[in-house]
Length: 84
Image (cartoon, rainbow, N blue to C red; front, side, top):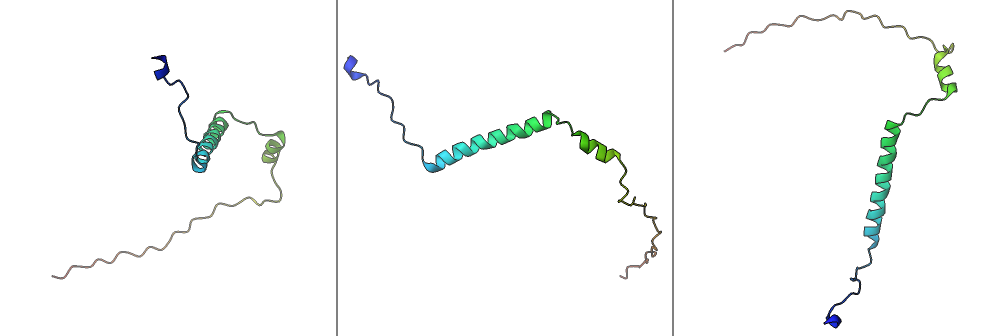
């Protein structure tokens, strides 16, 4: 009766190249998604140099003047009667 039981591990076929590629690709995709989510949740403080550059007015740049809106000449719509 004890000789009838087979306790050997089941034979599992070796994964193919495409299965391995898919498996590791999914792992890399999951890691990338975790990094993206963590980048949104955890804010990274800006460096001190970037803050000082933004606060200083730049003399090389000319401030843009708002464009004056010129009234466009609108033509009145021609009223046409339908001929029946």
